[in-house]
Length: 292
Image (cartoon, rainbow, N blue to C red):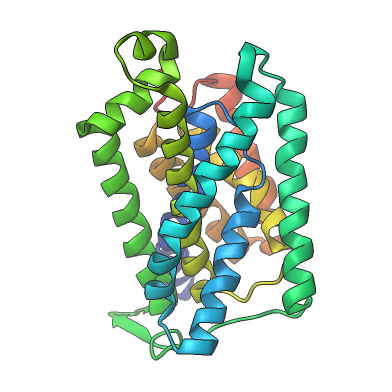
């Protein structure tokens, strides 16, 4: 077995693990942008906020990052409901749909979060130390780091559970209905504003867990979320707007593309290849891989 084949298999495995994590980062965007038509460009900044709060819980109380992420998630859910009510009152009420000002609203949230994190924690990189972050699972000639494997398992499980909930529960059917015809939903006695608020809260629920996964994988600093803005929207569009299975598939494709490119051509080429795949998808299948 030559070294190039070893590198190839390692790059593919690393890409799959990275793709699972990317799916968790993009899950909230698939809900808010793909299902609710809300361009929450602040979502990656909220992920970074989750990462910092997870780091603080680990540093102060010794909580494992995974536990910290799930403890924070309900508070992020409530924060999402509050943000959506402000967004609805200012930009959706009356059917105006001022999307440009709404986008500026989320840009404002992004910069406010960054400034708060800088004021509280400074600009230094922060990371967590756990018994498993420096350990690996040997698998033949492969060595799979737990800092990638654990976020992969949790991220994919989270996506599959939410996908099941949106497909099989009353709330999930209401979210699908409010995305297609909110007036019909209202005529059935359901408040579409409340449903959209809960759905947007769910998108921020995933941001808290995504932040916990991020702080396990790498160090963070306040402005690092900007690096993920293009990525999460690219995955959402690539997979098919609002299609969570497509989100997972698109994340895996971009994860493998980035890993392969970084391994054989250098890390600086990885974003170009990823967005090249996105452009090809938009040209030949603009609705996304699994879009209708």
